[in-house]
Length: 166
Image 1 (cartoon, helix red, strand yellow):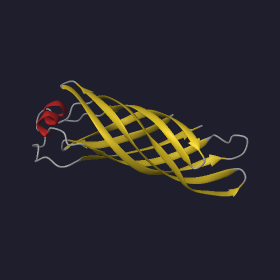
Image 2: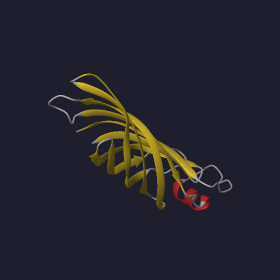
Image 3: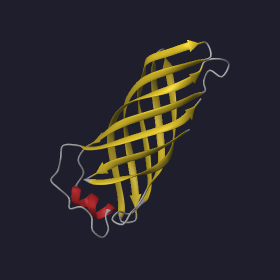
């Protein structure tokens, strides 16, 4: 399990919050295929409603470097990329957002008899197709929210986490 935070822009409105995620990965040498999911709670404020979000995705990971000072542990750097879909359910309605992501991370891995235990840190950049700005403002905002601006080619976001894997 991984405990992390996520933040992103949806139609020029910033949303984000804590979440709990999980991942299953299968490896072949330096490569892994992975399936991941996350349940999070987008925090509200004076201008935005909060609510739950569910996400599921898949991707690939490449172990770029591994430094093993002795036989008991290794520090590893990896790159990963994939696709996901997220559904945000708020009091004023729901939004479903597909995205592509790419990121990097490092992990400290036990190499002795607890070979599968590791501590992992990661960051990802997330890109989504542009959403209807007015629809997003209607669902996310209450009171005085930023006026939707002209459409862009992509909506972007950032996510990261810190967790224990085995």
